[in-house]
Image 1 (cartoon, rainbow over the protein chains, first blue to last red):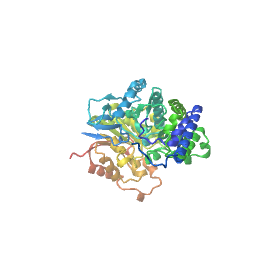
Image 2: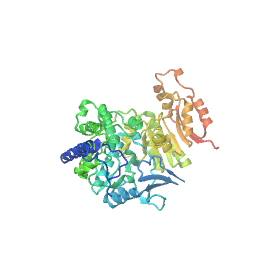
Image 3: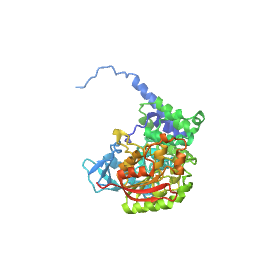
Image 4: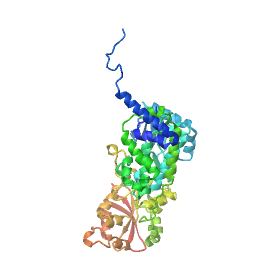
Length: 57
Length: 453
């Protein structure tokens, strides 16, 4: 990953795909969708989330 | 003795220090990797050779805790974007975009996009932050895009589209206007322009909607590539090249045509030449420089000439004609102060100018009569610069003073304006080396030196 000491701004990063032209719009859509999917994945509890942790002996 | 550059601290991979007049850049392992990526690219040699990138060499100095030390030549005079004219900021923006495009074509990118990384040397913009370059990783967006819009694009749009000077904004907020600020400043018809819809309105909306969201990985997995950055950069370049600001209506652009200016120019030049030869200054500060006739004389003498004037059209015209003097747009009654982090990140204008000789031709009477600054205060300020001064005294009987005071009564003017009073104020502060009465009979040149301690 490029080292960023600067806060690039989430919206400004996604916008760059759109600014890149027609090919970028699909990229922006995919990135947008990935973000939504990512949010849902965090919001929905995983099936084993509430089960007690076990350790193998 | 070495000291850290007060403006170089944000990027932990690269720090600039000043060491006995040498400019050293300290790199950590990450910074060194960036330097190696830069020097492996062919554009580095090209951009250095044509003066767009500051010259850099690996230093013989070793510093504990740092992976490498680079060395740059000293920039004669540091200026900031709030002291630049429209054309200066526009050329700086184009340089930033050109370097990024050339870098990306060879697998290198730039980690920021701020005009503070650019300085003007001999009238041309030079990129000075070598630490800004690093290897491009496929899938990464341009980290500096938002910064570019706030510190280059929006200020230029403010001037070109709205006719509003950008310098007060950048001086008040060095980060520049946000996309949301910019949207509020544009008219409805301006907001409908494609560039405004994308870079201003859409960016403002997306920044608001996606604040704090982690999107870099999503962009990478979605197939983002440097070709998208390059397409954006090309369009930004075309947009900025098309921006124009016509400053012909500046109040002082016709100053050179005034009768007394042409009449006195030769005598004033000869008087300054005498002072230059007497003091051999390395740095000359020309206050109220106007067309920089006298700054350029100091430059030809071999000094670093810093020309300060508050009139943007005049300085912009000078810049466009390629004047080699260092230009600083600033109102003398309110010169740029020290500001930024801890109040020292960006030193004040006069501290940066650090003159060995000050020229104050045709300016003191404007401070006294237009800005209503008491004469003793004006002279205290000049004396406080701590170096020889060449100045022009203009008597109350002068036709220009008559114009400046046409709507003022005697009781509204400060004391200390007559030749005798002025002479007394001068004698209290300086040793007079020479005087010269100009042909019109109302103006006198003084060559002054601080009193020996």
